[in-house]
Image (cartoon, one colour):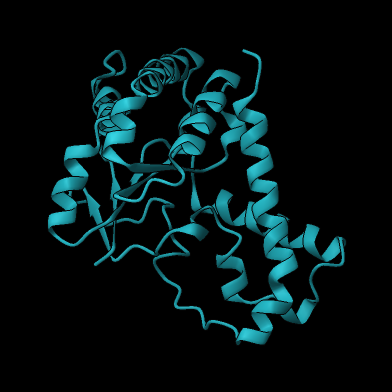
Length: 235
């Protein structure tokens, strides 16, 4: 087993029953920024990658007061994480952020990008943070990349496949999840990693992959450029 995904059901409970209490969000963010011991435990079980559904795009539909409070808390915790670079270096945990990062505040975008760039080469474990995220949005952005690739002449129509779509997703650098854990025992899928948990795409031949490389390089370059731009934002 290489990857475990977790849906934090405390989110839906909080929205319905305790609208003035950010305890659930505090626990999620704390778990993210102090994930070293968690990954040590996971590694003992043979798990080297953990994906957390931290914040759904659907939650932006809540009141601005609620959302602003949650984002402010995330800013504080991620800023603290960055300030403890020696600890990050020691733990060697790579953080990746899945989702529509453009929907976050400039300050949070900057922090997310800086954390991801700082830890991208760390190799003792991976924490994927889905924030703000839905599978529908992830797939829409993947299809937009493919559309741009066709527009730029980097792709032919017959080159588009399930494998190629997978290589355009936020999760393309990681592994597909082997297990999904919901903290409430709920069985619905909640628009979380739907493609990754239901696809076993056939890998193209070596020659086909070589032909696709210019497009894949374009996808990686676009991603890296966006991260660099966010990391250098003036906020």
